[in-house]
Image 1 (cartoon, rainbow, N blue to C red):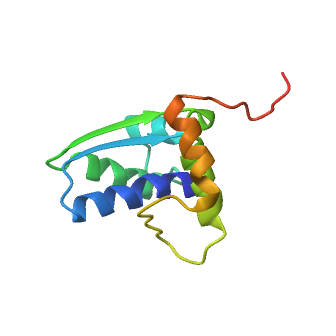
Image 2 (cartoon, rainbow, N blue to C red):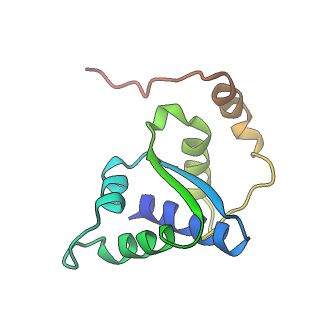
Image 3 (cartoon, rainbow, N blue to C red):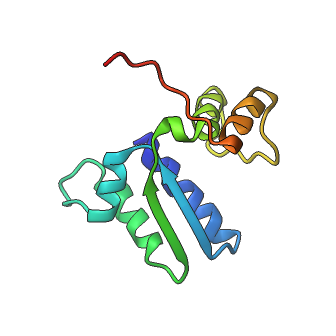
Length: 118
């Protein structure tokens, strides 16, 4: 559910800020599929998926795609950073100092492994 909120809240913020061309990348592949395909009313995520789908149908250009967590270390780091705060929405004008290395990695296209043994 947190991952879907991570799609829903930024879309709401973008709409209310007047942005009309938005690209959303999400590392929750199942969530992206649910949003793209829709769900049955009996599904536990129906209401938030329905809400997101409604927002995507508004008069604006949106693109939703799945990305691997390792491909966006900034978002992954900020998600961990924000989970420690006591606020529902955090807006950063610049990344926190702890995220600067992640910004660098993303800027050069460096993908780091999450360390899973296969």
